[in-house]
Length: 261
Image 1 (tube, rainbow, N blue to C red):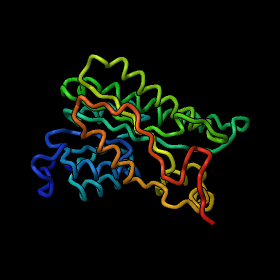
Image 2 (cartoon, helix red, strand yellow; image 1 turned 180 degrees about the vertical axis):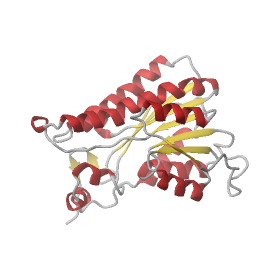
Image 3 (cartoon, rainbow, N blue to C red; image 1 turned 45 degrees about the vertical axis):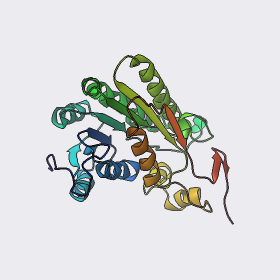
Image 4 (cartoon, rainbow, N blue to C red; image 1 turned 135 degrees about the horizontal axis):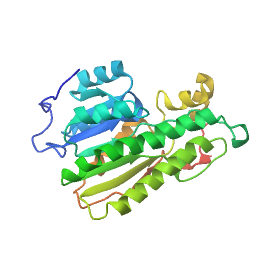
């Protein structure tokens, strides 16, 4: 398992993240992996957590990040992770996912429970455990990767939109509860992002997954969201980006997407 690494020689000495440790969850693919790469480039000492250690180990070898196993749905795994991570300045709560696209009348309650456990309860579990360290850092950052699904509901998305609405409310509540503490609470809410796994995990069919993006000129990619995350985290610490909604230009709203023939 990779240990603490020296700052990459390609990172300038005065890089915004120099001397700060950032934890990124769900870092085995997609937005999490892209965020880890970007934060390393910004000078952060990055700790990546996820269940798939083969992917994390490869990411650590590529970037110099530290890889630790983490299953947010397992309290013992969270305890072990927190015990190994050391001081923390930044927590990027990115782990999550959607696991069905069924209407409420056909709801699979096991899928609902999994969606809520991963997106909400796991996020609360790790946030609660690391919050004292963010406070102790004197300039902590607690960032949630939410979704426009946490702001707008849509047909066939109730399990996911319910979970992401909960994440949105969690961020809002923490911002109120931590108003007198040296911790910023930031939410980044992406719209349509084309990653290798998110939609495929949701619909379990590659053709249906591809159809979601068909005809859309330049949907967002993981690196676009990572860019927004890095920007928010590298503002002067008195500047709090409460909520940043980011969509591709082709997506005017949740239900209004321009598709080229």
